[in-house]
Image (cartoon, rainbow, N blue to C red):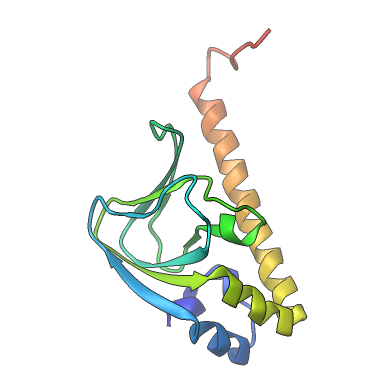
Length: 151
């Protein structure tokens, strides 16, 4: 089961994994399809089962991140207090994803607070890693020129 391969769910008991699994929906998307678009209501959280999904921010998708490893998670805007997604998720290859409704996942963690704490600690680590990677990408784009001046 893909949820067991996801770094985010490591350390959760088999009972919690089973409870979360009962709330999962498997979906298939063709190349060029969008799982969700930036500014749409953030109601679901996703786990990549197979394929490749590009996350992009902005009208021209200038900031991107590739989701390509089975078990990688995305759409976590839905879990961190945002009403809408901050990026668009476009399949750049045929993809199979697992969708979990945020309200159902939150309900599991309300009933099992220790598991919720472990999950959200893992989520914050993933967000932090992606943020650091974004900083590195931005800095490498300005290598030799220095960062832009706004003043």
